[in-house]
Length: 133
Image (cartoon, rainbow, N blue to C red; front, side, top):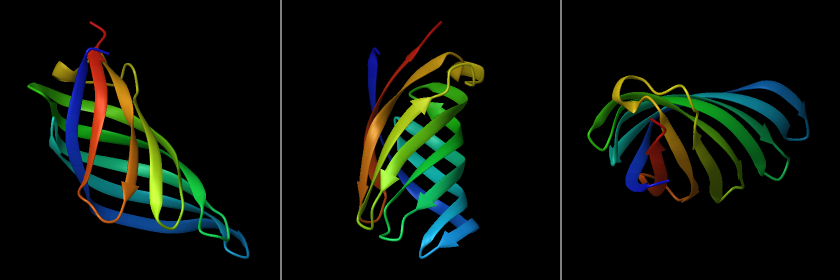
């Protein structure tokens, strides 16, 4: 990757509902969320997560987010794949830009990053990126 970006994101909307309640606090939830971004990523993302909860409040998740806006001086949209784990105090996320899903000036975007979230946002993060064209 030839560039490192810095940005923050905040949660604009979070709608979480169970789709399979197993027993004793074990459950599978679906989340529809909207995030706003500022910094080297400017824009808004719409996201769907699938989350698995254990009785102790720990768990894991996967998700896809479409972000419309810009990275640096390039505008368009792109898709980020999220995978991660959580506990009652923090979230660890691996982010990866999905190849082939960038549009307009963000076509060819590749990269991603790692995020560790604690407390309430906005959350700062860094990411690596490049363009494969």
